[in-house]
Image 1 (cartoon, helix red, strand yellow):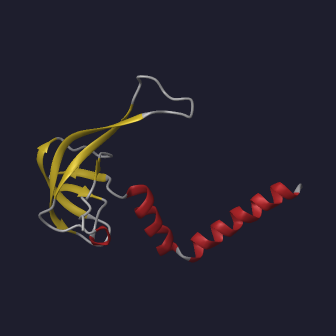
Image 2 (cartoon, one colour):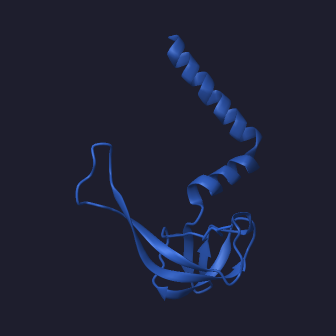
Length: 123
């Protein structure tokens, strides 16, 4: 086995060990970088968002709902192009925990996999 392949296998083993040893840290990283802002469920109970106290969510906040789709008007050389389209607004009814909140539709239409963002407060 060549040294480059051996190094890659060692790096992979270290990453697996790190995530196995700290599952809470792995879950937090998954939330922060991959799911944050995702609409994960739309049901009679409400719209569940992957945004919670850890992200500054509070009841009463109104958020824009954005739909991300592939822009087929011509992809750049480096890969696909995507566009963001505002498709509605939701209002947070309750914060479930540090990662999740329940909201209601204020306008438009929210679907699973749409995104919401908390506005950052300017100082």
